[in-house]
Image (cartoon, rainbow, N blue to C red; front, side, top):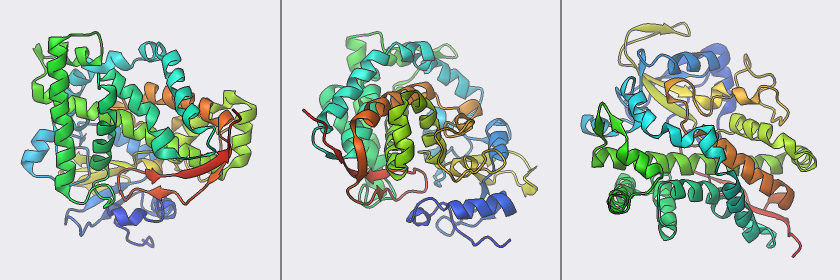
Length: 405
């Protein structure tokens, strides 16, 4: 094929942003493409098309999350066994058994009951920056609401929330020297959150409450309650998933509004457009770029012969811009009629458990930001995380018209 070789698992491949032109060529010429990886010596299939990603996601018996985890990194057998304690790295039927434990905490009725409280939080966040006319948007705005909401759900004390923020940053920033200089740092950050999870568990046993922690403590799988280690893994996954991804989409959405002032003005004029704009943020600049599966049989996909045991990487960033599903996919359009058909929350067994909460947080946050942070502009170039997994900014310094006192 004419596509140049680009190792999409090399974080340096994203130093100038997501290589959308490369993905477009892959979708056209080789939708399922074998790529060698000199960093690990483990090659992988790049899956770039919407329908192929859907097929993989809906057939866990053929494409496993548990065999070598859903993460693209290579691990020892001992590490894989430990990772399988997380829902993210489970296959049916285990995945559904564990998901049921916390599923009711994230259903629309329960989430929407928190709407007034979440609105109050969002207002307080914007109150702190609006009069100043400038802020570091990632830390001061984007990170705050999802951090506060998930920590409240998980029983994290207010004074401990920024410890959680700091450690999850280190974990997800393992390939960025500004955030984590060694793999040991990421392990130590995870260990600190595990230890804190055990503390939360002990506190709950001494002082039970009706919250998400209670669901984890009292929930059962095959008649047995979660072990302390399983609880800690659950605690870590929910904190990271509930914190980092919504923060990333909030920051990416702000960047898009600055880059498209005409559409920003349309949202000021008609706030009813905000929910669909949020879906377009998710489609156009998703937080998670890829997840892994492992082929469980010899099979054909996209005209290619996949062998049992092969590493398969699904690229949501590419599927969300598939020309066969989205017209003019490289254009940002808050009026896009099928924006909600993006796959940024996944599909199938592993569809994002917290998708309704994430959507609500994003809609509430932008309903507060859009009318109050007027005439936003970049004060400095967005500073992206070095990562082949998350499409995330470390900092986004912006200026805007100060809100009158």
